Length: 255
Image (cartoon, rainbow, N blue to C red; front, side, top):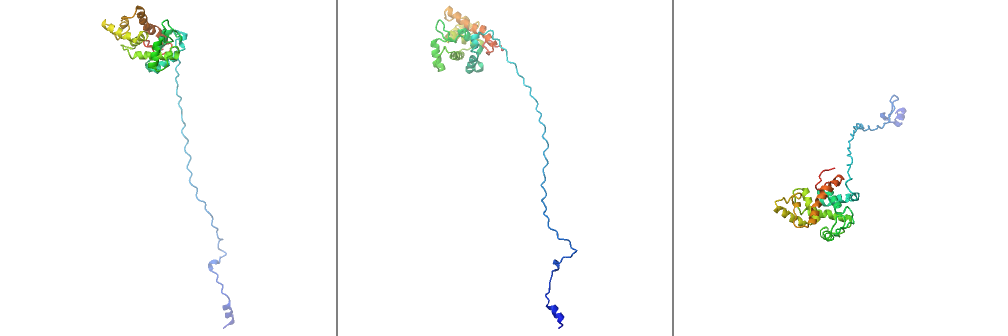
């Protein structure tokens, strides 16, 4: 065998994959580049809010009423709030604080320590026996006729007690019967009404009817009793209405 051929046969055969052989003309390998994710879409900002237009509200302030205090004794003015309060507590909106105030003026000239010649006591001139009975039995509290608060409270309640036990054609006549009973006793009203009916008079009208008959009082007591409602409601009461105490039983005009 040819020696050269043997030598070539003995040489190691170097096998180089063609794929590993890079031609000088091939481009350089490109390194992979990380691609950032696409940004999320951003919502557009909301449109500006509509401006709020505040319309000013006109507030009408009524002026404080001007009351005429000239007809009310200065000593009596100090009890105004208490009279109005007790009237509302006992009578609600149906009370007559101007009448009650006039009644106190008539009874005691608004003197809390007043004592009459027959023994009536305090602003409302309760007789001790009446104060004892009404305070303990009706009001359920210790009687204190010389205490202004108790006297006003008891008078307003006693008036209510009498009011529901008399009847009349209207408020003014009914209040007159109430006051007559306060002054002289409820029993006399019933007797006077009976006598008025027997004489053909209207028992539901005090003025000009029941007030004209006397079922047995003495002349002095009869005169005092008949003058009591008239003086309170027709003479004194209007001054308290004008002074801002509220309505009276007969003086309905408002300030």
